[in-house]
Length: 194
Image (cartoon, rainbow, N blue to C red; front, side, top):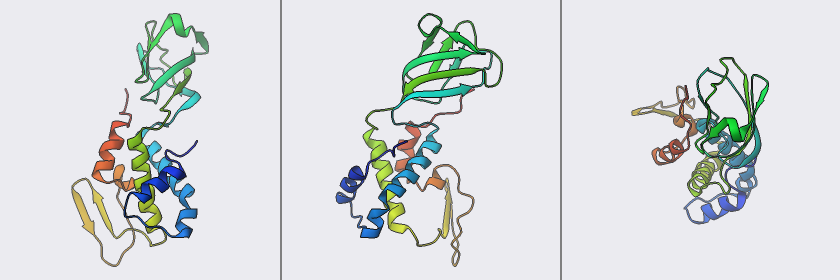
């Protein structure tokens, strides 16, 4: 899957900020964009960028509504419930938010629903591109300098002189996202669905 920002977008971002990278760091830009994009996708719980023909295998819970991991569902191509193909047009309703409504209820069985569809944004939202570039530029400018000597978890912060091990960071803290970046990513993050 392509990174959430292109190398060209990254160069444009760096031209508008005080970030200065060496030639060696610039050569590694695709590596940084891939890594940051993967971290953002893991944090948000879905691809964010356009993906056609995505296939999800879901656990049926016996309810009428089931969610696929997407906040921008563009089309549902096929759905199988306990190996029975459902007529997407006549038997189901679906929302852009990634919810599928089956008035006959979903099976109550693990891995019993297979959904194929198109989802994600094309182009990637500008704020996601900016966050990706921002995080990748920080990663590029600090690469090879060792681990962190401080940790922040929510409102708690601790500095450990003489050490370079970051422990205990979770969620956006693990990403190295600023509070503003985290607020943006949280708008694209899938909440736990029951």
